[in-house]
Image (cartoon, rainbow, N blue to C red; front, top):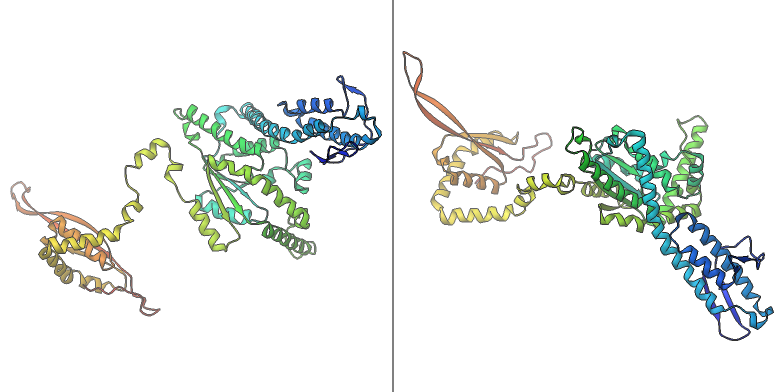
Amino acid sequence: LGTVSGQRHRDQKMLRVITRPSSNLGQTSQKNVRGKTRNSPSHVRWLCTEAVKPTTVQLKKEIHRLEEAVTALGENVLKAEKIDSKKKPNLDEMAKVAATILSSSKKNTVHNEIQDSEIIFQTVVKKLETKYGRENLRFPREIIWLMGAPGAGKSYNAPWILKARGITADEIVISSLLTSPEAQKIKREAGLVGDSLVVELLLDELLQPKYANGVLVDGFPRTKVQVECIKMFKDLQLQLNAQYRDTPIGMYFRRPVFRVAVLFVDEKESVARQLQRGKEVKDHNEKVREGLLGELKEERPTDYSESLARKRYGVFKDHYGTLQELGKFFTFSVINTKASINKVREDIAKEFAYQSSLELSHQTFESVSKIPLMTDITQHARQNLVRRLDHYQSDHGSRFDEVIETLKKEFLGPIKLQSISGEAEVRTTNTIFSEPLTVEMALDILAERGYRVAYHQIRNQIPLKIDLQTGYVTSYKTQTIHVFQVRFKSTNIRGGPADNQEASF
């Protein structure tokens, strides 16, 4: 709030106070306040002491009083030349007091924000429990918290995020929930609506049955209090899950999945997009008023003023650091929407791909993890294939050659016959495939040649002897049919020859 400028010369001492103007400036009174002269060093110390107390309601008022008092104090100091030297205030002491006010108030502001979030969230939950009953607090299983810089394209990219997650419900846009005149005025001025109102409206909306399987929330959180409320919201859902999961209504209280996504563009791009949007909306609405088009679009004051557009981006920038706090607790994705449309879509698909460790319960995940992932098996498939083929040739050379000859005689014909369709099924009773090793050889040889092959067996019981008196079969012969389903690239008749894999060995 203030710094001291000057030397310890007797006639050149000055306290420089940087603060907002006060309407009471120049009207300072020497009336005692709680035994302390107003704007005196002791008065400032008392105000500072009062401000650092963790009383949420009075904090802002006390800070405002501090600003007025220190401003007035600076005026008195500037008049110090007219005051008798024995009555001059201690400038060093006043400077130290003023210098500690801002840091103290900031620390307590953070402390009180956390206290505020607890009070706000618990109050909202109590209201919902009274209104619906605790057993009916059935929130969505998956919630995507979407934030973005102004002009980052949230409304355009939200459908792609929903598609990537298989969510069919429409997104919840926080601004659409804030329809009161007071909220509308704050939004027009690029400000932020009170946390208590926002949290209450949002949680109430999330109880709608249409969001049961998942929902995207656009525009939340925007403040430190809202970030804290999200963490407490997750804790509430876990508590509800523990309380009701073993009851008949347990299906409505599944393990919650929270994801945080931020669509980002830099300030220059953001301002340009906002102003361009304003121009497009204005042109559209003019045509609507002329009767050429259908419905009017919302005109945002921030889209017509560069200063307001920058202010709006500044609000996002100020709260981005707060938003990053959620990255410690939930899946956190930042997507650069300045890239090409295709690149943005690829990034969205990648960021919102299925993750079993995140979406399954701990017990379920532990069970299914006993089966290795497909990627773990296929990651080194080519290297393993080469190693096996060399092993066949070195350790089972003669058998390996027999399998190759069998493939040439029995497989090439059906493959060539079905070359247009790109799929052939080869059935054989050749006993060479009665050994697991030779089947593996055949599959690996065909794979190395570029074919995709699936294999299975069919076992038939062939009657050999029948009792003519009873009609029962008394003797059987088992026949094994080896079935190879071979797939490959087909020939493109209309478009000329395709990159067809030639069937040769």
